[in-house]
Image (tube, rainbow over all chains, first blue to last red; front, top):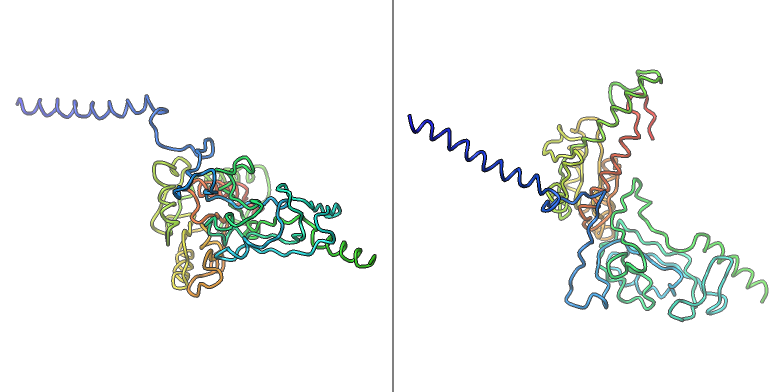
Length: 193
Length: 163
């Protein structure tokens, strides 16, 4: 008989212990929950540690971005890309280091180097990119970089950019109309000389 | 897509019913876990408690019969492409596909010299949302699923005014 009541007491007390833990979690839900409420809140992305100072190395794996005004068309990023997802076409500028206002071309970069080439096509296919960061190291003007992290002052972080159409994921950084504009500029130049 | 389509005139009741069906479909897209490579780890992480997908009504199912969304996560080889197609055909309507990661979107790092890799899963099945990344963060996958929710909400299953 006493075993019967002891069993009832034990079952009730263990149940209350378990419910107490649940209740404590419910009361302190905002304090020690683990879930990231994604669309409302975003946490900073962890930066990859490669054993060097983060301020010197561009170490984050997000979308690539190009400041096309600073690009001198040296093709170093295109050559180092292990999957050839960067496509660059350049044309010779009529005058070295000169602005071509018709096509929005800036002659001198922010580092002070005078551009000899006009970039008429700068496409990065982000569906083929493997986010290895190799293209950011050789860039002499530091104009190609992954957004956010150490480059947050240049471009806000962007790592979720899904699209309904695959062709929208090809990012065209060269200014619109550069190719036709460049042909016009060159033909005008040739006609004068 | 379904048996109800093109059976109704366009009026207030049908339009409201359309919206209700779209809302119901968009808030419970159970996804078919099709983890093929490293992206599957991120998909598991998205379903686990840190990026709890079930708070959006998305639940991983292991059978194509119970699933609405197929998340193709990872490198689709030529051998696997036939199975992707077969499993997509076994899913019940309405069905959606998310291509997760570079490999499923366009072949990724194998797009040029990969002799055994399908260059994009959209060759065999119609893809609704492409999630880029190698692999994408769980947040990026959730963003893709939210985009898919918008797409489902815009659909008009009864009057078939596809957005």
